Image (cartoon, one colour):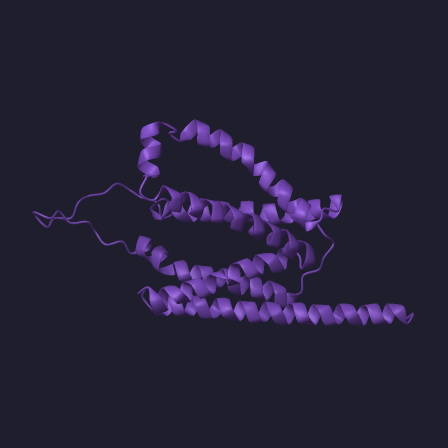
Length: 226
């Protein structure tokens, strides 16, 4: 789409990142394959269950995660293409990005949400209404600057680097869950974090080598050599 090139190390880092996700989800996958029989609490007899396919037994959240990955990748790619075609500045990209989302949010809010007085009193109680509204205002302001930084990162570095950074920033979150919030530190979780870290290092080396080769190519072109 952008006439770019992908090196072998870049593909290797991508494979490692995908492998990290598979390792992290492997416990859920194996739990479906090795599902324990459900027993009747009174008699202890196994309860007969209907046939369930392997895909049907998986958590539906993985389907939504896969759909989210596809949509997010398409969003980043087409946003970069649109920035290049129209010559948008970062503030322009941020402005239109947020402006286009307002009609969708307003329509679905009016159609789905309950705007009655009872619902408002329940969701925004008078005791902490100011705190909730202040938190929502802060969240909205933070979203504006996140949108700006997203447009800047995609324009300066590229969609591949932006996506890789977005994947790598999940590793500290996963590690903090083990260190501070009591998540189990089993072989699968630790291995997934380690493989993800290796993927980041491999990608950094790949981009460094690619930049060095590009500089050498430009130097040869400037000197009149092929």
